[in-house]
Image (cartoon, rainbow, N blue to C red; front, side):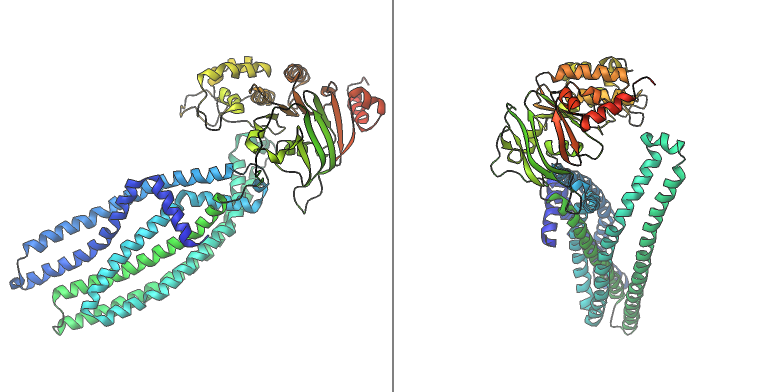
Length: 604
């Protein structure tokens, strides 16, 4: 996208953020540029009339000078206030647009791409200030141009030669600032991967979940050194750039000072010869300083605007990113599952450079039945789950829902038909009620748990066997499940940390909250539970699963033996399938795994 288009988007963002503030901000720019010129000319009038009273009355120019001086003092503060208001409002709009764009990435592929993560971090930074900086740069150009034109006009009246000299001296500054701007943008891109690693290590050093292991294994020193190493590398890169910038700015400052000095020598000589009046000298000195200040401001705003445009390139890269999962040209509504889900010759790998994870899988999951997936780690079980949830599409082959390819359905609508407890389930630092309510929040629904939802939240907690635990918390279901975040900034909030098994039951309650789910996926739903709790949760889930289509994954094969169909995956292929009795009689991979686990419970 061109720079003009990026500026247009930035202006549109600021316009949506607050029209009144922007209009006032725009109106003040030419006023702020005019006031210094006006002060210089009024100063000339006052000085000339002090020296020569016959030149006219002095009261009017003095009064006007006082008013202009007040304006010169007040307008910058008003500008600064409006700049802050516009910046905050624009950041709200821009970040909202940015995260809506990331929400459109319905798959996982781009979020697993390191380069896209770098772009995303810079896009977040750009969203916070680049739109406002772009508009501020444009208005700064207007203000600087008005001031520059006024003082150049004054200089042209007094000395066309000096006007040309001052204007020519601005060319090296403009070229140098544009070059520095490009280097700043490149520097940010270069240090972003290290910055992300630095934040990762810093997060580990202050993270409560990581604290136990870090202290037990004495890893604090290692991660601190790595964090400081990344910070040191970033500081080194910035230091190189800063030195380059100091050298460049120093040369430009010397050039500006030499130009101003030459002008001052000429003005003093002209005044002594009578070619300039005292007021003319005052205007000349102010004009030289004003032209140089105006040129510096214009060049600075051009460079700032150029840098903002480069940063907005990262923002545009995220906001305009194409969906990572193709949308159907003619989307079909997702019907209730009546027949079943079929995987037909499904092949999948995470990228051309990666090995195949699934190799020609053919599987039918009948509606209303339970199917269990077993196999060693890396066999492809979790990948198959990701494909069923359509976080990815098969590299080859198809997955069909009652005969219709999943790619023909809108992704969001498909997922309303699927409930899941993932092996790496989330623990949200929110209230107990919110942790369960998140399982069935309407996309445009309320931001808080409606009072009418508390009953079904408790029902879901009962099905997961965690209602008694949550009801007994200090604030019941309104208790924060966190020791780090406070409830509505209440520093006295008695936040609570749940055990791993209790958290797992909360995750299960979240999955079973919706009344209607055609497919329930349970990926290691009892991995964090003791034997008694595991038996309890499986009895509860068996009752809930009755008549529902469910896909079960567990390394504890005893919890899967009642599944209608057991499928053994090996190296991305289906090695065998059947019920427990059939597979045990066959004596294949499933029987070997089951007997190996059973030996652990046999008396020695």
